Image (cartoon, rainbow, N blue to C red; front, top):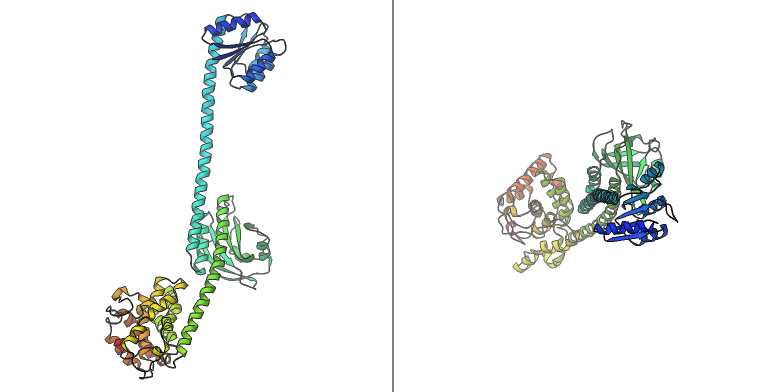
Length: 526
C-alpha cells in the first residue's frame, strides 16, 4: 500500500511516515508543500493521502479537489489544528473520506486509515459492479443491434431469393405485395401500374386485410397530380389526404381516417412504371426504420426484376417467333404439310381442356406444342418430301428429329415438362417408341396428349401417295392402338372431344391437309 502525506510540519510528517511504515505500509512519501504534492500525485499512484488543511503555498481544500480530479477513487483524510464546521462540511462535499483534528493520536491515524481503506475497497467493488452492469447493458444493446441486423439480413436474403426465383411478370407482382405484407406490419399492400400514355392506373396485385372497396382493374385518374407527387420523390413517401383528394379510389372509398398510406415508386430506367402502396395504422404504428429499409430494397429488387424480365421475355418472344417462322417455312415446302403444327396444337389444347389440365399446362401446349416437329429442320428435304415409303435407314434418320428439336430449343430455358413435348411425342405406351423407349406413366402427360393429336392429324391429312382418312376411320385406328401406342385416358378425352364436335357439325372445318406419316399408322409417321 502506498500512502502520501502532505504536511508542512516536518517533525509530524516524519512521525507519521515512521508509524505507517511500522504498520507494513513501507511505501510512504511525505511532501511539505502543495506544489510537491501535485507533482507526486501526477507522477505516481497512491492508495491513500493525508493532507493538512493549511499549507505554505496552497489551500488544503484546493489540493483535495486536485487529488480527486486526478483520481476520483483516492481516499483523502484531511488534517487540521483549527477545524471549523464550515471547513469540515466543505471538505466532505469535495470528497474528503475522513477528518483528523490536531492533536490526534497515532491510534486515530490507524483507525482512519483502516476506515478509508475499507471504504475504498467497497468503492472499488461498487465501481466494478457498476462497470460490469454498464458493460452488460452495452453488451445487451450490441446483441440486440446484432440480432436486428441478422434479422434484417435474413429478410433481405428472403426478398432476393424469392424475387430471383420468379420467372414471369405474372408471378412478380403478387410476390411483391405478399412480401411487403409478410415482412412488415402493413395492414394491406397493393401494386399499381401506370399504362403508357394513359391517365389511368391498373391495380394488378393486392394482399392483406380488406379495408375498402378497391379491387383489381383499371382506374381513371382525374388529372396528373398523382404522377407529379410520385415523380417529385426519390423513394419512399407518405401520401397525404391532400395528395389523394382527387383519387379517392385509391383509398377504397370507405377507408377510415386512422389509416395512413405509404408509397414506393417503381421506376424502370428512370421512368415511373408503377408503385407499391402500403396501408398502415395512423395511430403511431407506422413502419420501423428496418421495415422501411426492407421495402426500399424490395422495390429496387423488383425494379431490376421487371427490367430483366421484360428484356428476357422480349428475347424469348423473338426466339419463339424465329422458331415458328422456321416451322412455317418447313411446312410451306410441301402442299400436304401446311398448318400441321397449328392443327396439332389446337387438338392438343382441346384434349388438355377435356382432361382438366392446369392453365399453365394449356399455355405450355399453346406455345411449345407448335414447335413439336421443329427438329425436322435437321432432316434433309429429300427424305421429308419423299413421295414413296421410307427405307429403314431413312426412317432411322427421321426418328432423330425429337432429339434435334430439343437441342434447338435448349437455349430457351424451357422446363422439363415443356421440353418433353418436343422430345417424347413419339414415345409409345408399350415402350416401343423413340427416342428413349419410355412407356406408360414414364411418358410425360403433355407428350402423351401431343402424340394423340399428332397421330390424328397425320391420319386425316392427305398425302402424295394416299388420300386422307375420314374422322371415323382415324378414330377406329386410334382405338385399335389404345394402351399400345397411346395412353387410354388421353385417347378417351380426345374421342369425347371429337364426338362432341361431331354433334355440333363443325368437326370437318378443323380437318385439312397436314404434315404427317408415311406407310401404315402402326409403323409411325414423320
